[in-house]
Amino acid sequence: MLLNKEKFRLAVTDILTFAVSLVYLLGIRLWFPVCEASENGFMSCHWAGEVLKAMSIVLLLISIIHLVVPDEKVKIGMDIPLCCIYALSFCIPGRIIPLCKMAEMSCRRGAQIWTAVIMIVLLLIAIADIILYSSVFAKQKHSRNGKEEEK
Image 1 (tube, rainbow, N blue to C red):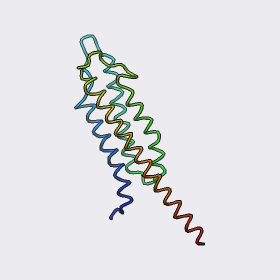
Image 2: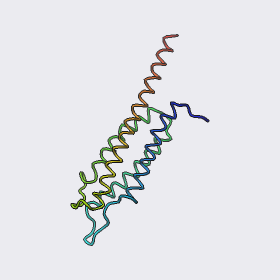
Image 3: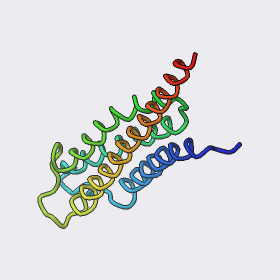
Image 4: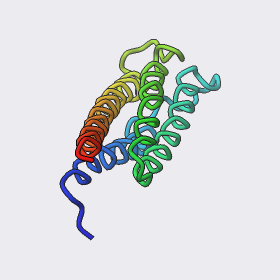
């Protein structure tokens, strides 16, 4: 079964969302984790990391659902709240939940920076997705109106 150009163009944003969400899940766990527990217990950045790990799982699950759902209206309905989730995730490390005071700590060097970068990328993909699907709706509506006028 071959995908037509329109469907493939739409699928690109779904695949990108899934790929970036997967990179974020792996990254927050492996490549840019927050600080480990100290001898005094857990620092606040530990809790930021726990929230980011949970958010990364949620984002990956939503991206999988977004990938397999065929209805464009449902996808736009998912994209709008996803933009809010991306903005919230952007604000978690260092803004909502404080991080270590030292700039060279892994939570500031890694988790905060990469969370911001990845959330901005995901937000841009979601906005592109909304624009692409909206243009599909406009084309469908225009073609339906033309057919109704012919009758």
